[in-house]
Image (cartoon, rainbow, N blue to C red):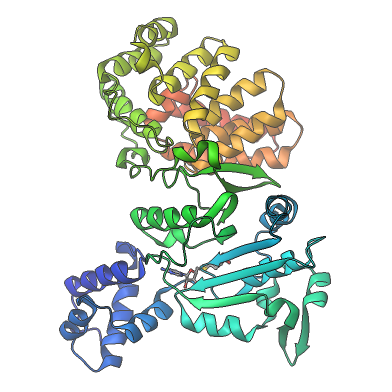
Length: 502
Ligand SMILES: C[S@@+](CC[C@H](N)C(=O)[O-])C[C@H]1O[C@@H](n2cnc3c(N)ncnc32)[C@H](O)[C@@H]1O
């Protein structure tokens, strides 16, 4: 049935899927799209040209788009998924929002991309069981584009698989068995209102300002293009009350996506809190993550001069990505030559000279994130860790999702003997940028010194993997004067000390 379809048609199909559903399929998914397209063309009884033309029309064919949503979305979910986040919900987000809403005694929660309802019902169960909430009015909305999943959610009957992250005590308190189905208790079921909704489509009535206290949008934006994810997150930011909470999937972050939130790190997990009144003016949709912010493949033949030139461009990109609402227009860019010269000197271990170049920059330049970052690196190399920490703090005030600044903070805290905060900053850096090797290596070293050989080995193995592909610009800046090979050798030696054959 696919014989007549060509690559051009699959690409047109992919464009329509992106336009209507926001879902982004890269080239590796072409054969999957080809299969779905073939099936849909056949089911519609038309040729591919007519089918694609209908999808490309000004109005999406509603029923067909519903079917495509069912065919193309990933709907994996479970009750009480990611236990750490659920603890943060119960112990931080819900009590905090109840305190904030004590006057109206109304709470509003949303599961955005709720699939078959497990997440929304988890929110309901947690909220229902909050101390002191009995006479409150609690509204829990749950939306998804996949109508088959919404029907399943409304039925509220689940297999054991949906309960794989739920404790036996909770299963007993929330469900009763009918045959092999676990049927959800009516008191929880009636707390949630489900509705078909496409997150990529604007609806000012639904996404009204400050409406929600807590939004879970986990494992959804990862399927969108960065542009679409940014627009969905802007809608979410608008509809969250100041101080309200956003939970994303554990592999998703707001770095380069939104500047409307503070990052929170408790209960071994990450989540976000909407900035409130005083700093709400920092809200903005950040510019797209520059291509240069994505680690470059290693070029073993790259000359030192090329490394420096590429590094200065890439460092600018790495620091530019997510600063909150800075208005750059009035301030001309830092002369690239200065940063390049400072980097060159850094690479040659002439730290004091490099710092002199940065010190000589006009005062308005000195607060550029790239200059602050380099300055903090140089201070760290020069052993001036108190000064480095002050620079990092300034940089984090401008851009609290700057992974490099968190890593440097980790080094500073370690030198102050504050190992817990050091590990905390490393974890934040690794979460914000999962391809960043140095915080993993540092976490490994901290863990081994603390006698946690298993944890150390886990981090060091990960560091070793990441180092193979680590950006050469980032190694130059954060490698502490060591090259890739030296750092990998260090990882292997540390792994041996942990009792592992590296
Ligand atoms: C992997 S599930 C996540 C379920 C739940 N949030 C969790 O983490 O357990 C992703 C869900 O997002 C939904 N989704 C994808 N694109 C969407 C869109 N444009 N609008 C609304 N929902 C969408 C899918 O239908 C799917 O049910």
